[in-house]
Amino acid sequence: MKAWKLTPGGGIEGLILLDLPEPVAGPGEVLIRVRSTSLNYRDLLMTRRNRHPIIPLSDGAGDVVAVGSGVAAFAPGDRVTSCFFKSWTDGEGTPEDTSESFGGNRLDGMLAELVALPESAVIHMPPHMNYDEAATLPCAALTAWNAMYVQARLTPGQSVLLLGTGGVSIAGLQLAAIGGVRSIITSSSDAKLERARALGADHTINYHEREDWERAALDATGGRGVDAVLEVGGAATYPKSMAATRFGGMVTLIGALAHEGGDPGTAPMLGRGLKAARIFVGSRRQFQDMNRALTLRKVHPVVDRAFSMDEAAEAFRCLESQAHFGKIVIRV
Ligand SMILES: NC(=O)c1ccc[n+]([C@@H]2O[C@H](COP(=O)([O-])OP(=O)(O)OC[C@H]3O[C@@H](n4cnc5c(N)ncnc54)[C@H](OP(=O)(O)O)[C@@H]3O)[C@@H](O)[C@H]2O)c1
Image (cartoon, rainbow, N blue to C red; front, side, top):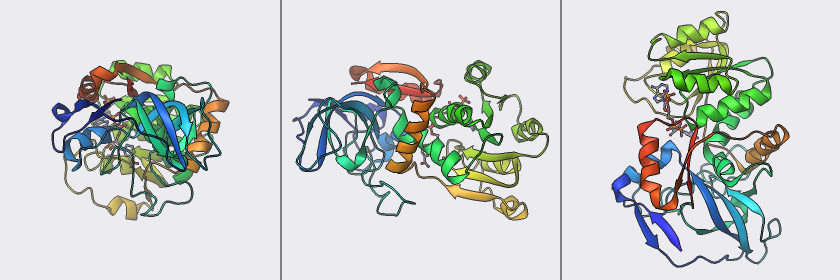
């Protein structure tokens, strides 16, 4: 079978397409014919930093072709996606639950024609989605769901601030729309903001034109501040995210897209009684909860571009360029 592997420290140039032996479904495992995979910012980091020559990507969707002994919940023909973590099925998530994720460290990921996953790391696709759409869910969308509806417990009429128009933020925008949550989204591009408005964004801010975007976010909430921020920027955006948040609101700590800047400091958190929650994607149970909501409202995740298996390196370069809106997929 065809599969891509990364070369430790090799970056995108180090990705190589190989012909590998086909895996089989062992006891408790599900063998999946992968149809589509999606890229996350993390996967770029893995091409540079991972120490083992693994198959990359945490996210994939496809068809079950065989099941091992003891597997009861899946049968050949089922349309499924991978989970991000190998064994975080439910609960708050222990260090053990979150120690192994697909496409990281020693654990092979989804950029292969066939993969054998433990039953506990497989979930049925929302029936209304195609493979490309379902492949966007395991990391970015679940992260946004966990931040908004599990940690920040947003309710209809509350507000969320979304930074940029990458995978996590656009999933957050779509999840805000179905939850009746007011969305305020930033971008470096007016064209992307126009697309965000078409998806239902209530308020848009160009963060290149408005360096004081936190002020614009405050204005959008009548000076009160947002109820929650999906903080994907890190050190360079964190102080402004805190400033844009209401008294007692929540900053969910997700990513580090913007590295420049020093220690953001915690003074505003203390002074304004803010809460922070470190997000680590989410559990299989949360994934099921999210899929129920997406299925009810027939949400179609935003796939910006689809590449072929042979074009995988090009797909990674596209993600790196940050020209995308939402998600990039590779069809296997
Ligand atoms: N903790 C977790 O569980 C978890 C899960 C998923 C992702 N993450 C992290 O979350 C971050 C986002 O991941 P992703 O996959 O959504 O990334 P992505 O799709 O690659 O996001 C890229 C977009 O981010 C925006 N951006 C970049 N720098 C920005 C800045 N200074 N201010 C505002 N927006 C900025 C840009 O949007 P515009 O082009 O519109 O300006 C860019 O197109 C990454 O750091 C990732 O590692 C963490």
